[in-house]
Image (tube, rainbow, N blue to C red):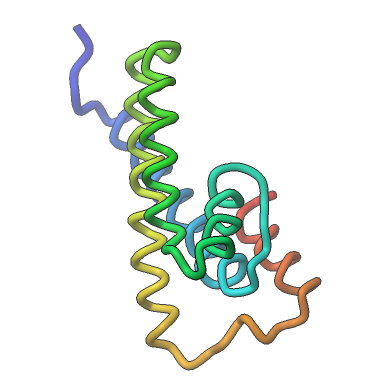
Length: 127
Protein backbone atom coordinates (compact mmCIF):
# COMPACT_ATOMS: atom_id res chain seq x y z
CA UNK A 1 0.00 0.00 0.00
CA UNK A 2 1.34 3.42 -0.95
CA UNK A 3 1.91 6.00 1.73
CA UNK A 4 -0.55 8.86 1.62
CA UNK A 5 1.96 11.67 2.11
CA UNK A 6 5.25 10.97 0.39
CA UNK A 7 7.73 13.64 -0.61
CA UNK A 8 6.99 12.98 -4.28
CA UNK A 9 3.22 13.28 -3.79
CA UNK A 10 3.54 16.50 -1.78
CA UNK A 11 5.79 18.01 -4.47
CA UNK A 12 3.26 17.03 -7.16
CA UNK A 13 0.50 18.88 -5.31
CA UNK A 14 2.75 21.92 -4.81
CA UNK A 15 3.47 21.96 -8.56
CA UNK A 16 -0.23 21.60 -9.35
CA UNK A 17 -1.06 24.46 -6.97
CA UNK A 18 1.58 26.73 -8.52
CA UNK A 19 0.44 25.95 -12.06
CA UNK A 20 -3.21 26.49 -11.24
CA UNK A 21 -2.42 29.77 -9.45
CA UNK A 22 -0.47 31.07 -12.45
CA UNK A 23 -3.19 30.06 -14.93
CA UNK A 24 -5.95 31.58 -12.81
CA UNK A 25 -3.94 34.82 -12.49
CA UNK A 26 -3.80 35.12 -16.28
CA UNK A 27 -7.50 34.29 -16.51
CA UNK A 28 -8.55 36.83 -13.86
CA UNK A 29 -6.30 39.70 -14.90
CA UNK A 30 -6.19 39.39 -18.69
CA UNK A 31 -8.75 37.03 -20.23
CA UNK A 32 -11.88 37.58 -18.14
CA UNK A 33 -11.82 41.43 -18.05
CA UNK A 34 -11.32 41.53 -21.83
CA UNK A 35 -13.84 38.74 -22.60
CA UNK A 36 -11.23 36.74 -24.48
CA UNK A 37 -12.42 33.20 -25.04
CA UNK A 38 -9.86 30.42 -24.93
CA UNK A 39 -10.50 26.73 -25.23
CA UNK A 40 -11.93 24.53 -22.54
CA UNK A 41 -14.15 25.15 -19.57
CA UNK A 42 -12.73 28.62 -18.87
CA UNK A 43 -13.63 29.74 -22.39
CA UNK A 44 -17.12 28.31 -22.05
CA UNK A 45 -17.51 30.15 -18.73
CA UNK A 46 -16.67 33.48 -20.39
CA UNK A 47 -19.26 32.82 -23.10
CA UNK A 48 -21.87 31.94 -20.45
CA UNK A 49 -20.93 35.10 -18.51
CA UNK A 50 -21.64 37.22 -21.59
CA UNK A 51 -24.89 35.41 -22.39
CA UNK A 52 -26.25 35.63 -18.85
CA UNK A 53 -25.17 39.19 -18.17
CA UNK A 54 -22.34 38.79 -15.71
CA UNK A 55 -22.55 35.34 -14.13
CA UNK A 56 -19.37 34.66 -12.16
CA UNK A 57 -17.05 32.57 -14.39
CA UNK A 58 -15.40 30.88 -11.39
CA UNK A 59 -18.74 29.47 -10.28
CA UNK A 60 -19.48 28.17 -13.77
CA UNK A 61 -15.99 26.65 -14.03
CA UNK A 62 -16.51 24.84 -10.72
CA UNK A 63 -19.94 23.51 -11.73
CA UNK A 64 -18.78 22.30 -15.15
CA UNK A 65 -15.58 20.79 -13.72
CA UNK A 66 -17.48 18.83 -11.08
CA UNK A 67 -19.80 17.42 -13.75
CA UNK A 68 -16.84 16.41 -15.93
CA UNK A 69 -14.97 14.97 -12.94
CA UNK A 70 -17.91 12.76 -12.03
CA UNK A 71 -17.97 11.48 -15.60
CA UNK A 72 -14.18 11.07 -15.59
CA UNK A 73 -14.21 9.15 -12.32
CA UNK A 74 -15.36 6.12 -14.28
CA UNK A 75 -12.49 6.32 -16.78
CA UNK A 76 -9.52 7.70 -14.80
CA UNK A 77 -7.30 5.93 -12.34
CA UNK A 78 -7.65 6.85 -8.68
CA UNK A 79 -4.32 8.68 -8.38
CA UNK A 80 -4.82 10.64 -11.59
CA UNK A 81 -8.40 11.43 -10.60
CA UNK A 82 -7.33 12.84 -7.22
CA UNK A 83 -4.76 15.16 -8.80
CA UNK A 84 -7.20 16.22 -11.51
CA UNK A 85 -9.95 16.87 -8.98
CA UNK A 86 -7.58 18.92 -6.83
CA UNK A 87 -6.50 21.09 -9.77
CA UNK A 88 -10.05 21.43 -11.06
CA UNK A 89 -11.32 22.62 -7.70
CA UNK A 90 -8.37 24.91 -6.96
CA UNK A 91 -8.64 26.71 -10.32
CA UNK A 92 -11.96 28.46 -9.52
CA UNK A 93 -10.82 29.07 -5.93
CA UNK A 94 -7.78 30.98 -7.21
CA UNK A 95 -9.99 32.79 -9.74
CA UNK A 96 -12.21 34.02 -6.90
CA UNK A 97 -9.09 35.16 -5.02
CA UNK A 98 -7.55 36.94 -8.01
CA UNK A 99 -10.90 38.51 -8.98
CA UNK A 100 -11.04 39.98 -5.48
CA UNK A 101 -7.47 41.28 -5.80
CA UNK A 102 -8.21 42.64 -9.31
CA UNK A 103 -11.09 44.70 -7.93
CA UNK A 104 -8.88 46.14 -5.18
CA UNK A 105 -5.88 47.22 -7.28
CA UNK A 106 -6.06 50.34 -9.42
CA UNK A 107 -4.61 48.85 -12.63
CA UNK A 108 -7.23 48.23 -15.29
CA UNK A 109 -5.95 45.58 -17.67
CA UNK A 110 -9.19 45.70 -19.66
CA UNK A 111 -7.99 48.87 -21.43
CA UNK A 112 -4.87 47.24 -22.88
CA UNK A 113 -4.38 46.47 -26.55
CA UNK A 114 -5.98 43.10 -27.32
CA UNK A 115 -2.83 41.70 -28.94
CA UNK A 116 -0.81 42.50 -25.80
CA UNK A 117 -3.47 40.93 -23.61
CA UNK A 118 -3.42 37.74 -25.67
CA UNK A 119 0.40 37.63 -25.71
CA UNK A 120 0.68 38.28 -21.96
CA UNK A 121 -1.94 35.70 -21.07
CA UNK A 122 -0.37 33.13 -23.41
CA UNK A 123 3.08 33.69 -21.91
CA UNK A 124 1.79 33.54 -18.34
CA UNK A 125 -0.36 30.46 -18.94
CA UNK A 126 2.41 28.75 -20.87
CA UNK A 127 0.40 28.33 -24.04
